[in-house]
Length: 320
Length: 244
Image: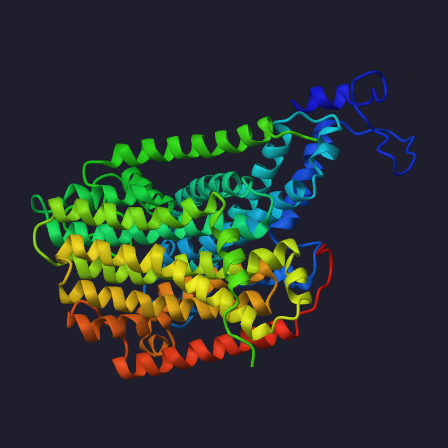
């Protein structure tokens, strides 16, 4: 794709329907093409996701969230260093899931609007679309940037955790064992980043006012998260296990309500049925019972719906 | 001292808050709360769930989020689109502005959070059960306290930041810390409301982190202080940047 675009690029002002002179100043240099525009847009959006290039105040929330997210990994490293015989406190795939859910919730709700609201509010989109990019490029660049931003938030703590663990084990075999655990953890983090970033941007792009965008994202995510937990508790208390080790349908399906518990269910589904003799930490994970496939399916549907909504939003948007 | 309630401001605020599609958004949590209560009532065994669902979910989500949406927009919407300038330019005392908007916010929160809480309780336990009444009164108290807090935030901070901080507060402080750390419960509006609800309901499944006296006292203090700060913030309100 990119090679094709760069080749097509150096053909400015040749009746290609591209407006270059938007009335600011003359420019006679080489025109970069679609690929570069998308790249620049992605890079600028990635910076915007962390408040870089804006005032100090814009950096406060992402910085606090990032530190919060790294805290368990740091504590784990310190604990291992002072007491090497104790096992690792934090796992790779289920990295303190309640903290991760909350931090990512706030991050997506507060930062996603920074990527899209300004352009909607200030009607700067015509300026983008006057350039040789297609309608899909804008949401694609924003999505790529925000997925990358979420990845940074999720994966860097995992890498810190890995470094902390590896520095305390001895022998190549132990290091390899850690690396083998890290890999799935990183991939699972990618599932988080992709799902949350698409949902966040799809919701953020519905309004040009950042205040309402933050609410539009934060409130449903928080609402569904607590609702899912409450129903899970009720499912366990009021209905009881259907059979030994087999929770009721409500407890097993309540995780579908919220993206965060949905992701927990996806992990449980990918890990397969729990081995006998190794009890689940019920407070930490979604129980899926026999419905693991449903979790995988809903994950894909939700992801497709969010990406589709985002793309459709910018396809239908009247640029005027 | 001018009249505390200004009918025009009340009317304008009410219309601005309710005339948009957002009003449907306010109703959605309430409908969910009632719907799920009805569903659970029809299917669940035992009577353990109403205090869990209505107490935990209702008090830590429905009431604060509705108050955040309403309390954050009665003043915040006007600050954001800049039309607050026209209101502040009129010779109306800032206290009157704050109290008028506050009354609207509390009334709307009662309609969209406390009444649904009562209806859900009535479905679960019957309309005159202690728990139902207790939850309703607790939700009323929550509406009074939360709205004061969120109104203060919008008067002091920029609209976006006020909402973000309000959401953060509900999420981290009320949702997470207050339920984990007992000390935080002493400074949590949700637990004040829960204490008030429990004093009427006498239900051991409601677990506030302080006594009802503390709840009422601290809650009243928080409300009054927050409103005072809001009046003060609105008096010192300066218009800067690109608001126009």
